[in-house]
Image (cartoon, rainbow, N blue to C red; front, side):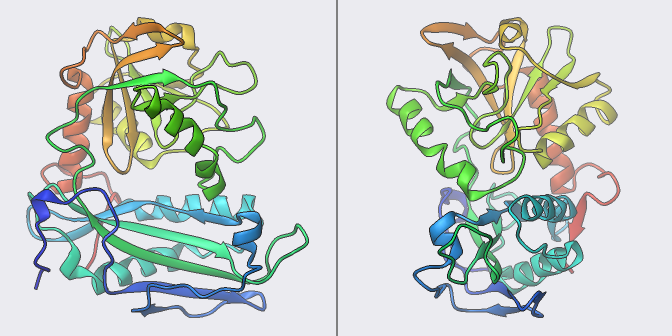
Length: 340
């Protein structure tokens, strides 16, 4: 039985569900893990995560397809990205097969919270890992906890995606040899002041430039950029300091293999941005958010696609990828993970 939730009017916020997954790493090994009903975490005041921010996470969704199956989109890529994040922060790696199995367990356990097909809502899945034993000298923790919770969320944009106005940020998101390419909590902590500042100045999001030269487009605080040229080529920034978005990689595949468009991942210089026809931000939460205007210290760059709706190519990309996710279009092998 589905929960009695007003699925159509869900926001993007936390609603506690009944079950979550937890596994502990101690004495050099992960325990077998289990589903628990306790949403609270008890830890020492000196826990590594509290002192030195040793924490990583992932974000993904489960949803109901047209034929009634509950599915998750490309969880193997989230598992791999978490392995990479763990390695960079000197954390033990939670095996990829166990990660996917844990996702299955937690979605099954919260099946009543998976929104019905057509509601626009999804079950957001948040795997995360953190150092839990006391650490006072600056070093990696010895004990860790891996957890997954879920929460039903509404569409990221109510009433369709209106193009965003973004600003070129004065802040840096990531250093050239830093942690920009992994999903560490600390990356998001340092973006908070920048996004609050952007909002206070009337902008929806930040465009971060590379911190070394401040001439190249990197990403926003939580999404990768995707540009469309005037001759319909899809261009996305290439950089060692941006997070490899699973949505972006999927969209590039869709552009090339479903829509027959030319795609290119390369360095994108900020002074080229004015020449693009369309611009979008891609990530798990919204798939693609169209950008209508980019403001560089008072200088406005208005995208030809305008401020009313998504550009035509961005819309095609969005429709195709969501069509694959919802089961309307045939998916590439391994993309749709059915929860039996």
